[in-house]
Amino acid sequence: MKTRSLLVLPLLLAAASSCASQPMGGNLPSGGMAYRVIPPTVSNVAAETYRIGPLDALDITVLQEPDLSPKAAPVDASGNVNLPMIGDVMASGKTANQLASEIASRYGARYLRDPQVSVVVAKAVAQKVAVQGEVAQPGVYPIEGPTTLLGALSMAKGETQLAALNDVVVFRTVDGQRRGAVFDIRQIRSGQQPDPQIRSNDMIIVGYSGSRRMWRDVVNSMPILNIFRPF
Picture 1 (cartoon, rainbow, N blue to C red):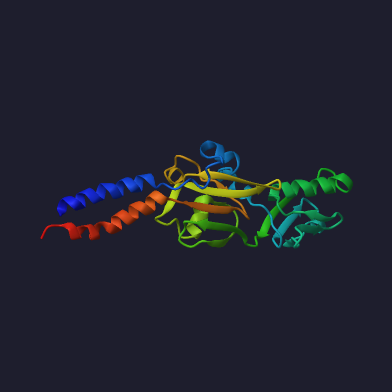
Picture 2 (spheres, rainbow, N blue to C red; picture 1 turned 45 degrees about the horizontal axis):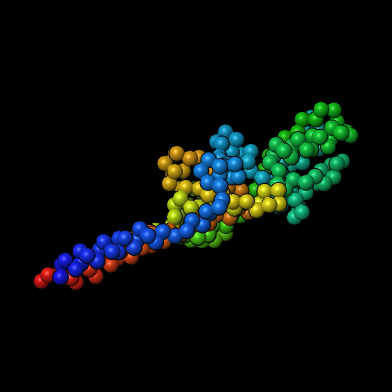
């Protein structure tokens, strides 16, 4: 009867190797090409990648112009910040530096000569990222400031045992178009690839590995195979 158990095991192993699931992001860019869609984190400019959103509060300083320098200026639900003399300025979707340049341009066009403007996000209202697929706790999670792919996965308590670690897709809307890219989180964790930057409204989907499930089933079946052992 022991011979029978030895015959069953190779058959199960063969089934495991042949049941790999189809990659979820099969037609999406991967490897180095993925970073053209979802750029990597650059540590010395990470803070500048934060995109201002509705209901954030901004400290705006126009050098030597205290009357034009509001503190905790609110960004309204439409994404605008209202400023003295120039009225509404679209802030949502811009970095602090981009908004400062826009404000300086508006003041410089009519009121000031070569204005020096700085913008600081005084209060960042939580923006959101969705994490789905083979993670321990799928859901929508708040993010404040710069966040990476690994950071977002940690919010969802990491991947499950059935996750396809080389098939983690990030979807993002760029210029009104939905785009996606595939990442291998094993290579990111080992330092072989950079950790891509995650933005508000991104969706992360961790793929499913059929071969991992089959292997788990094989391992779980090992105690059953012991019934074939000789007495």
